[in-house]
Length: 47
Image 1 (cartoon, rainbow, N blue to C red):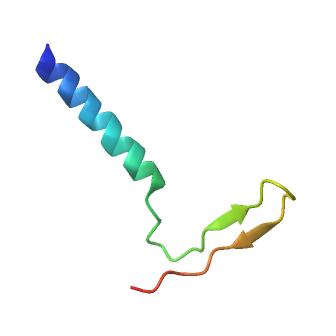
Image 2: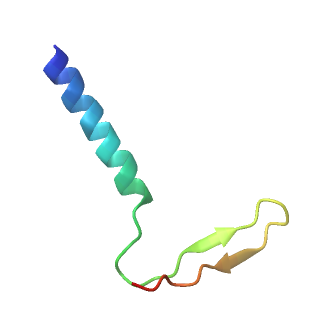
């Protein structure tokens, strides 16, 4: 039973990290200011 729990927990961790990963298709990330609602592009990171 511990193995099953460990596998499920590992899969959930990987899925949660994958949801935060940046897309590789070149589109810019959009951020919305919670205070004023203004949306803007995030500058690209330099490698």
